[in-house]
Image 1 (cartoon, rainbow, N blue to C red):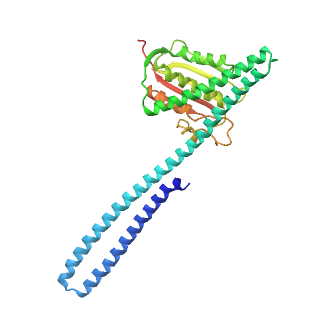
Image 2: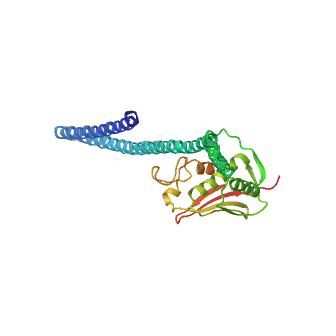
Length: 315
């Protein structure tokens, strides 16, 4: 706790020192004015003009320096304070991330362990029960794989170490393939309206993570028993991939932050859905690197995420 507060203590001590020095400077200026006034009373008329000239020149010089000093001091205090606040927010987000990732890792691991123990100890399990255990285990493995992929992708994107390999792909088939994979894992709450034959120049590996994170985010935060809707269409010289879901209304403040790293809507200790806060961050970073845009709307609970990409000619 002491180490955490040390930068703040040093910063405020420096501010206090600067303000004290400025006040002392003003005090010395007043004392000097008193001395000049005394010299006027005891000096001859010829010396008074010289004293007045020096007095005015020095006062304007001190006032000018003081104004510049205050301006730079104010700017410095503002910038340093903003930096501190940003670091505090980032530290809190990182703490929330560690809490979330602990939950995200622990839950599927515990589930897999239980499934293996059940399968090992109980010989009387029916075929249907074994299939259910197998399906649940596959879902947990998929969840862990997605988590690891997101962590690796975030590291690569932030370090600019990833080399994009752009190639012409049928985006329609790519999106359908990711939806089909979720359906094979037992997800039945997906509807889609996909225009056929939409070609795009993308890096396949990272853009698959965009599709997966959009689908996962919509499924995670949709209302129970409702379905998400995936639309893919062309519009003039643009391609639009839109994912809809019914959920809780999102405030304007949260909408402005949903694509920030580690940020998640709601309170960390009260929200029902856990996550890492990396999915939408990856979506935005990858889409921007593909010269596209991504926005989210959802004030009324009708959540809509729209990814826009430029069209590509088949090579």
